[in-house]
Length: 258
Ligand code: SF4
Image (cartoon, rainbow, N blue to C red; front, top):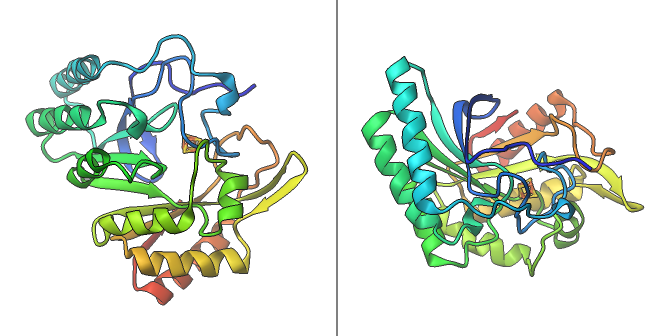
């Protein structure tokens, strides 16, 4: 079984296709996965691998480990573009997410004031004011919306709890003009069910959703690493660029591809 990628709370820096030189913050366990989605393409593997044994890192430990790393990088003159919350699951599931964000912003200001703080989130916790408040204070809140069709989200992202596209789109409007919507385009077959969010129906529904949310920008991308469902396909780069142009033409919102 494909297992989690990151075996520490602070990882990298790594080069990110989308973000540049990125120091990662993993608020999930070191040896397991905790997520409210179970995406067929997840680089951390399926949730079935379990949450591991180390538990979620306490907020004060996250801050201390990040400070140790930033201090060492600063002393070495290492470059950095962004501090990115990603890792082995969904960062907003951490019970002290807002406290962690407070601490990370303070460290950023002290050690690398020009660096951005980004959070990659699946947007399943936008019903919580503390999560929304924390996300609104970082530089890049990157909110996942892979499909505006409920059945496709169920098949591709496989929410662990209740999920309604219309509710999530409504909640995402809190990030109009500031948020970044991220959409992964792929197709494949899992347990005999074909999943494809690249169809005309899917693109049209997503464009309608982007128009309602009106994010500052949109990132669209394709599979780049091994996926736990091996049939998930990487879409053609030119196709992605064409879709990006179409979305911008329809919405007026800038779109990047990766
Ligand atoms: S939301 Fe992110 S971490 Fe969670 S299953 Fe999907 S890709 Fe993996």
